[in-house]
Image 1: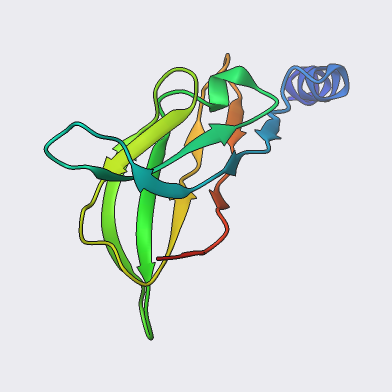
Image 2: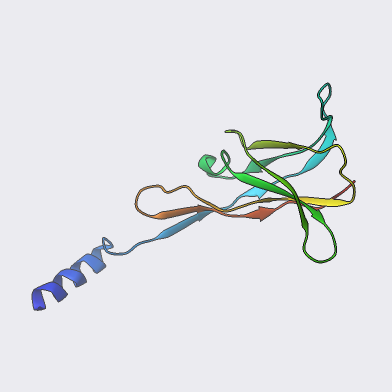
Length: 124
């Protein structure tokens, strides 16, 4: 039993037995404009930015319509490798914002989390 306690103490002091979490800031932007010629000509669009490049691509971005009570989900989309995203919507009116959801990029055996963020609210 003493050997097991000593081994645990050694591992803990070297950091081998300790897990760690690392998080990276993320920021999402939103705009709305025309991109013709397409069937849908008006798009929400923006970019996810981070100091960690792995936190920009393949991120889920949700666009919400800000209304009294629970905000209404307009739609969601995944970012391209460069963090850019767009979501077609020809009928958008009112106040809208984008939200990038957190993501674990799983580097090694530890949690490496890309943090969530809400964009500014735009009025259409």
